Length: 346
Image: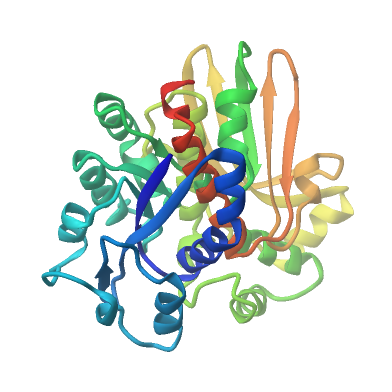
């Protein structure tokens, strides 16, 4: 199978994906009979480029990393914006990794909807489309016989969603709990060591874990959106972020964190989804967990999720410290699964 690919966004994750595509090209061809070319890249700040014959990815990487625009690689009429790019770029698959507002799910939700309406398969690393419009977008993809995959939305490239969808068959998932936000996990770990809250945030920003404006993480928004993804995809719910009982970690002190440790516990920003007789409820809040809980063992930028089911009882997936390549890998796997027709259940 051959896929022409359009990339939406060319930040850290999408550039890591471009490199991964180059590294894995022979593997994709030899093991999965999958060939590809990138026919377009659209960015918010560096312009866009379309070439029906395939862009030179290395040239695109050099241009963006040198602070230059992509327009010099473009062939054809100018493209006014990202939605116009989606419409005119000759692509079978749109791989979306743009900026996201976790409070609204935009602009990623509109981009995914437009791509599906235009007849393109979609792989997204953005949580917004799944948290704000999953049922709509899933139905649209099915109507058009298209793939709509999003493994990288929770725990980067770890196969959390695919395990829930395809690995836990003929079982009832009763509860999902997770530690899913790197910034809050880093800060809480630092508080245990006696570092003040503000200093812990500064340290997280210095190593690139936290954004300059870290409120989205500290107030629990990022974790909330991921929680909704888990609820909607794995438990079949139709929740939105506003439905989640959300409390961030802003009020947690060194004294709180150390008192928990002295009691044989750790404070974690716990994402919790419960299925009670078919009714799904979700919360995100700082919670003291016993040290024997596997979720207590993740620190810094590591993440973990635990499934409680009526058959396996408890299954925990732990992911170590991550980087953009781990997120890009999840997108690569989604691409392979689309090529394999997994969206049709084959």
